[in-house]
Image (cartoon, rainbow, N blue to C red; front, side, top):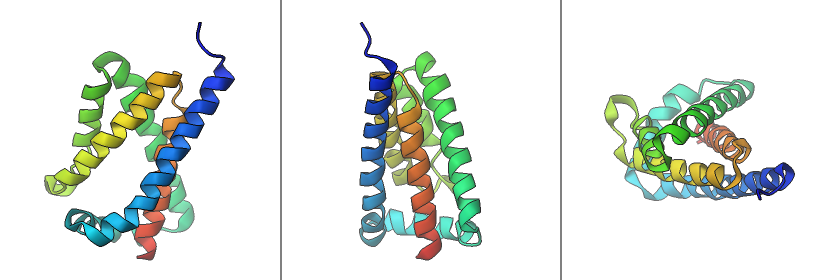
Length: 144
């Protein structure tokens, strides 16, 4: 028998929050230590820096919600966890397919988001993680 929805929701949100906190904490360290992260940071900064905080928040909400509904909610049940995560990673190759390390990072996060979805049957945790990561990392881009 499946756990009650409230329990699954709480687990999903808790796992999503945990993933988000770790990723957001790792971002400045990656930019500091990894050439691929510095290059990605420089590329994305030109796009993100002119945006206001409300615009960044709206972009984070729209992209996080839409990507989770599409990749986890629609693709994963049909194609499976690994294939949906591979496609998610491929969508993060960046401009001119210049960031394969970012695609690998996105693939790993896609796996984590997908596992949360499979364990709990709800997208709320992956959506929370994705939106929080996008919003905090875009604000980091804007400031640094």
